[in-house]
Image 1: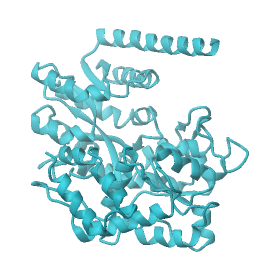
Image 2: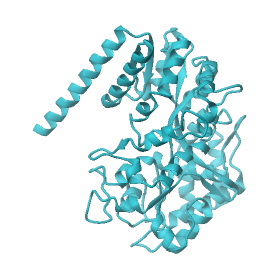
Image 3: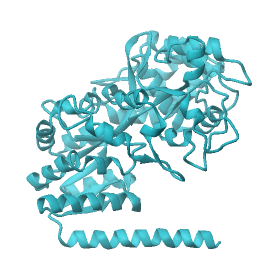
Image 4: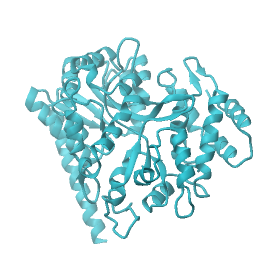
Length: 452
């Protein structure tokens, strides 16, 4: 009980000190900044960056924490009241809808991108926020889902990295040897968002999407049957049962899985930096042995889409309709240049640098990010844990980051389709043999077509 009391007290003290800092900043603020990075430690880092910005420019910034779940309703209400902040840090889902609604000033954001140098940004996140003549926001950070695999086993067996359906299936053929080693651990628990996320990645890899510029179009039968056959194959190379992120991580950490699909938030755990999720491949819960033999793939391709795709989650800075445009732009420019390493340090394991360097061809921000500490119970920079080639692969996924419905202007509808979990359920029916592939495509299209 004493440990809990000390921990609780420490958290209250951190929260109180951040609150005092917020009050002091508000009193001298010239612009207001909404952020969904609202944990006390992350707020403190943003306050420090805002203080450095004021020292450099004389412009005060009030950092205002907002719950991510409340961001949409708060922005709509503030817009109606003419009381938007000057700058908002927001998720991809709001980029184009807020621009169309007039909440964001896309022209002001585009001017920032052009001033910083469009060719210094990863093209994927820029494309996801592209408007007819510019960008809805300035891309800040993001991450891409990864195929995580045992590079040592691939190398020993002369296997190509799992960059395609074909390479994954070839590896399963060679490495699947249950119960000692499962070729894959596929997500099969239909009521878990993890399965939705993994499936969207696999569908994107083969160029299969349910929407076009006019709304729902239905899945292409040929492409989708290829997706279904591939997913059934990786499910059959997985353990039985209802599988989601927990089992895939546990089996990989125990050395019993050749491949899984996971987010980059596995990287610190994989290197033994988190006591609540230690590698169990040997008797040392802090071992880095598994990290040393692990490879990752971000861009993944199916037979109908040889260029492949990476499933990406990206965040943006937006200048609002009520902003002091010049000062808001200066703040964003600072946060993406002199203050960019501080911006990424808020949570480097999930904030990959979208801006590579200060000039075309430069990698100074990627290099600085790779040296930022990650972890929970122990900390170390990613560059100490993983080879430079792997870090390049992690960051490079942002170049081709995609999501259903973004380029078509149908992200809202695509999100409803994903959240319905109908795709999960019907894919599982196909895996279990209760429906054939053509029937599964037809059933998906019928059910998803009713979503508005």
